[in-house]
Image (cartoon, rainbow, N blue to C red; front, side, top):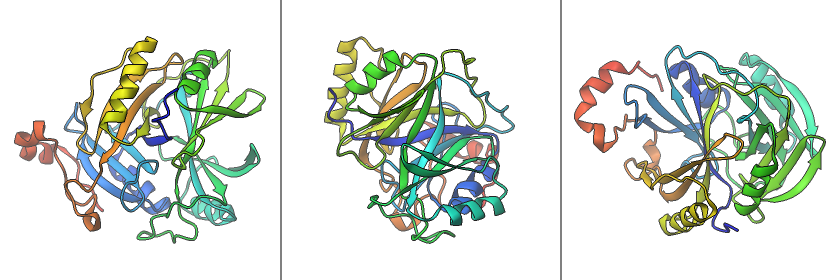
Length: 310
């Protein structure tokens, strides 16, 4: 079992408009933009990161906004919903706020004994705010949402799969235990995790496959403390038969990737070095940061990227 994994590190999705995406997360949800950089493989596309004040692992939602991208299609083989943790008793506040911001799909539910508010992002992204009384993580309080109602970070994600059997084995290998079941939904959790430690798997044998596009989750990343722990995880995954990439330097963390049996792309990312490696904490997300391999293209990249209001 991979005891090095303590929960989620980040969730990366795709969008069709950078400014709309930025406004939704910084204004509607009140998160902080902690990094404004570009896609390593397509440097004419932003890579935007949102989270708590420091971009703590387990709080960071990231996006590739490809201009005018067609919306994805919901189905099996994807992360269908990203769950955020909010303080207990705040769902009335959030329902009124999100309705006022024009969010669609607003629906109150109780799942596994937790009160939640489901809603859609600008590209039809699936989200839910989950009330938690025991979350000690500090929300970002420098935006339009006060800490008393603010988002603590991730609670977890929900994956939709045709067959959850092989993924069940993988998650258990990755330090997740089954803690509850309800119909087609199985809940997994990391004991003593980082707060972003829930994975729900919905088994839908007859579902059509998902098609990625705007509003789709590209991949989810799991957190390990450092590079040594990451190498241990990589070796164990390779020994188990998974095809795992070499370690890749993503400037703010090191990453490895592998495809799960259900088709979802997993990443294992380090908590080091963090988003303050090239910006003071007080000014995170303000300047456009260009990866070293694209630094010589800065003028061209800046000319191609659409202006982004803070």
